[in-house]
Length: 483
Image 1: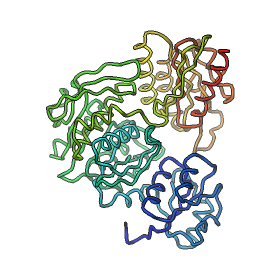
Image 2 (image 1 turned 90 degrees about the vertical axis):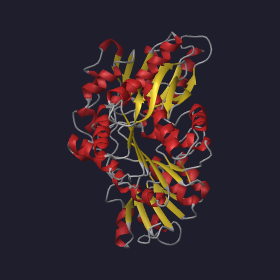
Image 3 (image 1 turned 30 degrees about the horizontal axis):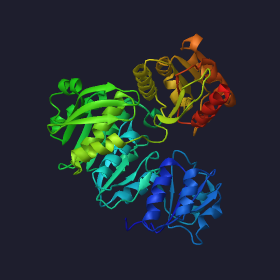
């Protein structure tokens, strides 16, 4: 680790968050003293306590002394934690360095072969698939993911191998602090304009990220995405170590980009998607347990990254075929059993919070329903952030109209202040009135979903906020209504 900062005693503000809890776990596995605070108790907080971390609920200056001594460094998320947080104020008063979570992750990755997954969408799923594939190939990478692997039940691990797999978050340009050996760019679509201000600045950060890869490294870019493909073409012109992956059509459309992997065939199944993927003249048969053509592209990226990290292709495929998802990425919650009006209704939950992500997950749901030959798709959607909702209101409406029916919750403001006079009706005004309802009462959502639901339907709760709590509630409500 860096000689400039002593990482022997680390205090993390917001330690229960998806990203923060992951780096905390790795620090503990590396024998550091870890303390932290969070607004509420949670599964990640309890898990970290069981590993030896001391965690306070609520934020206070005295939390810095949870381990007896003051920490040597304090870690925060500048986007989620306000600068007047009493722990940050106390750290500055005591001359303790305050760094971002991304800065800590960069330190943790030093000395490793860094496999970094970037892109507007699909980072968590692609990173997770890469980890599972490499584990199946016996590489045991260290990893930090923005969600818990369903099989492993964790979001981070200090591995014995020489590789470190992690998401490279572009939302605040923090990905530019890393040193990728293998970089994956899944797609590029304007987002986080509250930070970047213009689309051009947002696109530029991916160019800068790709430039960090050394000549003996690899930049793996999805050619099915137009902005990512344009970047791949410009990189190829400069002689950068870029390789494209994607469908056979996309690969043919971009012949100047060296081909790394190509999906030659794919078809939906009742529970996922099958595909044939060609890498280095090897035709690999993938039988994914998660639906959606976008997930096949993510799996292709994972296989290609794992291959260039030294993994055996057949073993990597075994890992991909065994992959059963990440928490909150088309996560299966259960099926309504018994005879009644909701027989065989399946309930899922997904983190999608951008129109493109909502489109992808509802398209995947539609494919699954069509594969079974019966049922409808019903969405319960909670917009995330006022700025994003106002920017993409019509796009969200078009995406949600892919469902047979939609219950739209009010906006989850997260780090943003309430915008007076703005609610989710700025989306529903563009939607089909007979199959859409705006429901600001969180507790009424299960009953609203039940109004649309019928036998064999697929219900999806969608959004990056508290809507995830609705999935089990909907399942219980429908199950109770059976009796």
